Image (cartoon, rainbow, N blue to C red; front, side):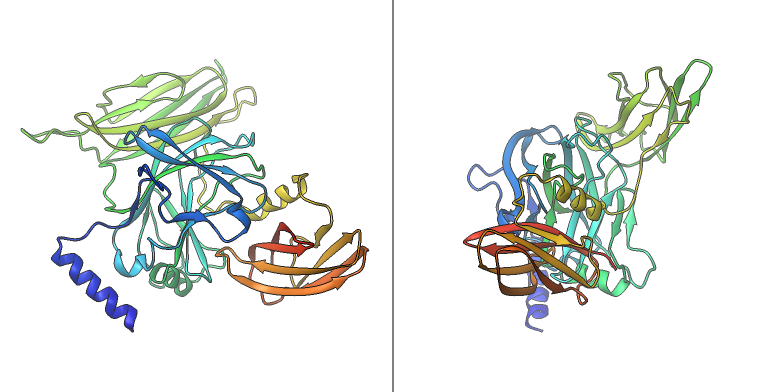
Length: 412
């Protein structure tokens, strides 16, 4: 009740001050550019953070995150609380760029996560990016599910939730405690991603939508992309110039100005291409939308856009990283992993020691603890995980003053 009264007062005060500025993290400060962002409560967050300049969208400094081994999170537990209660009808916006995908070779779908400390929801862009394909802006609607069988979505992408229920989704939106981002898109601890301008903004973006259709010719082994503009706003009035559009075809060529409803472009060389449409008013960039697709060429298959609207598969990511993390100490193993109702912590110590175990969820909350003294050699410590919901957890194993961190997958 106190919080609701405080929020009501804050909203009234905001209206009296002509709507005080909403949270916006642009990472531009010369001292402490991270602001209230910090590694999540897992050991060190397993991310390496730096700041570089400049983001071509606005010419300013941006956040650079390099993936570390294990579960990797970077979180803000201050600026984005109760966003559904305060900013409903607006959008959670962010800019994204992919520098390194760890050699995985498949498009990344930029994602941002919101949590209430119990459940987590993620907004997944419907536009995939590849290393060096350029910056994109994503806007997630701040709205409630209101009993719908599917989470809210818009032209930028969709909200996703493991074990989705409208009530749980609405609770996260209304009672959010922190916002998180991660470079963990593929099972390689070497990805590098950039984020910038993580802000609460108006949802108005491009004044037109775009549709990409593709075809493949077996006669000359070429592919054709047809980009159509829907509901354009290219007309102008005196003193109020309309929008102009530039198409970058992903092969070094471009079309500007784009003034007809549909434009065709032909590709003769197989490969992965990212088509980007930039809307401008005079010299100001309004927005940018990109489409990524693969042209297989020799296989004679039709070229198809690479879109998906599901959360990044953190289960397979974590499993693959665990299998490939040669730097992890070998004194401990989690079996089975993924687990269901139990997991064995298999130890192989050189001497008798006391081993302390903590299991943490996405928010950094400790959901399970156990301490046991084990003999040297191969031993087992059994953990009961029946009450844990499906998802990705971090297991901290402490002995002899050292902490070993490993991912644990619960799948039910």
